[in-house]
Length: 400
Image 1 (cartoon, helix red, strand yellow):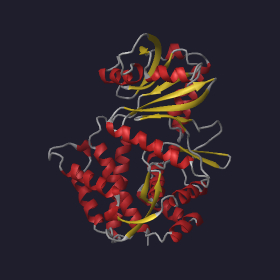
Image 2: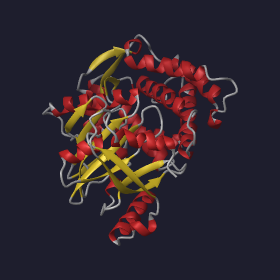
Image 3: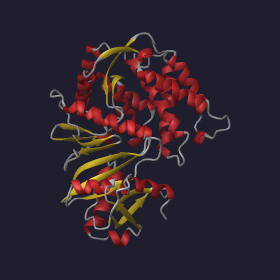
Image 4: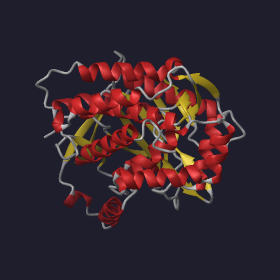
């Protein structure tokens, strides 16, 4: 049974916001759900290959096995027997979905319903002759509109630059809150859970875009941190917080914030904002980077390096903080990183403290409210607390 909320979200793409509707078409679809029963992927019943797997993170063995099994189901034409969940979507002339298909005659599609939360977006994948051509991101909240518009702006900015070696999607169509971008995930491309020289080279190039010295007090991100902390502090005392020891974390965050040199210049440049293995692919010695909606031109330039190591090691390898710190040490010793830190005279410890304060406060607000908390939340929180304690134990200088 499809929930009322999922039906509402489907109407975003199937019904136009206009009185000029003249015709509508009802098409049979299959769907797969999340663990809580909400819609995850939807695709037409006549889809002949699992194109919706282009939304799927296949950075670990388990996910790759799942992809292989689903591909076999499609190859053997067993979809109708195994995927018994079906629904009818009625979409009208002038709807987002109808307009997409009119622009791409002869193409099919699949729909990812997005991740629940304030930044939710529906994504439509467009395919033709067993090849994904593009993705259409559709914001379903005000904050998501800002993210989609920001991604369009950043991609246009990067597309105008001749000097960068990495590749990004091209903007094909854009209106406020909706953007269609080209697919740059090619057959034979792979993802790496390790931070490689090709990643470090991209970080060097990003660091040089809009590079400037900004004090922490002047950073636009500081306001986001203060707002996030205030929201966390004002939660009702009897809040369950999904079992997260929020008061203890907040106390440690306050302590490490005292180690930040608020009036000293911090080198900033362009940051991807979600620089992780699942947002990039490598093929023929070229790096392809997607999902630029969190990008900023005024961010401490080691943020992406720290984020890559933390996310990959925790979510893919379930590493503890000791292993993560060791990986960061190794990345900081790489020639390309030394070139960046030396060229811009970077205070590594200051950048690290900023990364933790910004990232932890940002995601804690999501995790304490999540309806169905996933186990990875507790992996992240445990490592964050170890990292905060390490900074406290080393008087603000964990990387001496």
